[in-house]
Image 1 (cartoon, protein in one colour):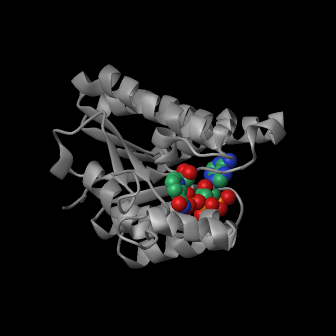
Image 2 (cartoon, rainbow, N blue to C red):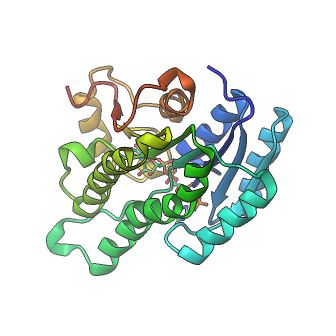
Length: 247
Ligand code: NAP
């Protein structure tokens, strides 16, 4: 697999799954533009790590739920790289609560970042991609967008929305040779899952056929495959990477 001559945009690329994706794509030869919101030093470290691999990298502070931020990020990215061939909509948040206790703010925040953020970034980039052709969009969904999960009505609805978005956009842009796919991770060891109580983690472990948590690199490998020409006849698909939870 190789991505030489490509430029990738990864949202939320300074930590967790997004960082692993940014580094994996760079290791395969892609230059990388990535966004962060919270920690400029951490973003600079990832940028430096990619540059040490001999690739160009640019970290831009941008909240994907804010259209002005997204437009600025795409503009700065296009000015710097002149092309963006791979888009990975990875940025995501959880605000778990039972529906009867869920506040409107918890609902809106998760929908704004996960689903509207995916819309914002893709919408801002799609015209450029249509002009360029041979592009790949990969959205990071979740198995709970397929199975549902108690305490995550907001999160699972946002991820189910991403799955519908992925299939619809794949149909819209397939003729332009733009492929649109999603990866649906199961339980991956990152900051997002670190905050879960031990009992919940143990319950999950019992359901995981391979009997261990996934690593960010497991998701990055699937994303790299979908970004590369190795998957050139695959579009509109949701690749589940969950160690066998859903079987
Ligand atoms: P994480 O460690 O909590 O990282 C979340 C990432 O999203 C960070 O890079 C963060 O950037 C970024 N982000 C949050 N709010 C943002 C906003 N408003 N605008 C732009 N970026 C924002 O989570 P993760 O586990 O790596 O998750 C990455 C993706 O995988 C998410 O879409 C998540 O839903 C999905 N996923 C994760 C799991 C899992 O088990 N971990 C399972 C299924 C799906 P900053 O650090 O700069 O704030």
